[in-house]
Image: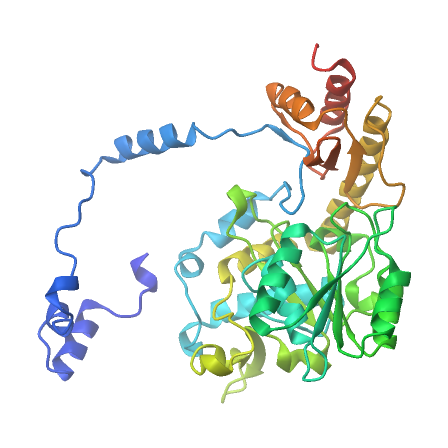
Length: 441
């Protein structure tokens, strides 16, 4: 890893000499001795073989399911080997914030390429370098929409509950009211109620819609955008990036801001992180976007170069004036997402999306044929769907005995299933067989 660190021992010695210090220890001699760590109680050292054995023992305590039919925000997809190979390069894995453009061209270019791809799949004009995760991206998006006279945030009830919670937490800090637009009985947003609420509220800043929604259903984003814009508010759409291989982009649907969780783009489920939140918007509001934006330019010799084009410096320095608390980005996760999209290409990306949908359609029909597991909502879905279930606890426990992680329990009698391109027809058929027999076979 040392090859990427720009300062050598000779460099450090020269700098210490200039400031009149003889060692690193002398440089920090102003730190009170009472707070300096002297004796750190670390366990005894291990050999490589001992360390590997200890780590394998720890890992063996985890339950790793060979077959997964659960999503609800974290999705199991196939990740081509080339993605990990590229992102394991030393210059990527040891990098941090690319403030010094002259030694960070590779990092800056990787972010620029990521931004370009995010704009392509979302149909937006500008993307930032990513934020912490999908929930924080949603919260940052609604904050972008606030104006002095427009502070009220509207969010669809069909949004992932954790995203709603995060938006409420952020808005509490801003003093911005959050109002929930109710869902219809068919599991989608009540757009008539949305129109009624926005028409009566001149303080409405925006409406946030998750599409596909938490129940996997496809919302009428175009109509939602029209209603929102007619009321003089902005429309923010949260999307699953993989769905954009077959669904219309947020830009085509009229969204002003598009956000989402980037985990499906080449990142392992990994016990919930680290992930990345992607954000893209129309050019008219790009200066309200938090975080960093990398741009392409030319240097004095006319050569292509990359720079940090925009970043809200008050987020780092004048924090009392900050409109966002984002002070970093998930650059390594964004690099992984860019590599994943590049390795797949347009045709591969569309194929993954199409397989997710087609396999989910097959699974939904097969599961719904089992008595007690009928589909709850009749609408179109992407790769998640809700079924009834006689007893979710018992059903999930039975599936676990067969090495299958079943759907996400919404209640004692409802399961949210997820199918991706990684699930085979044989796995789906086995799942259905177990549901039919109650695990007796």
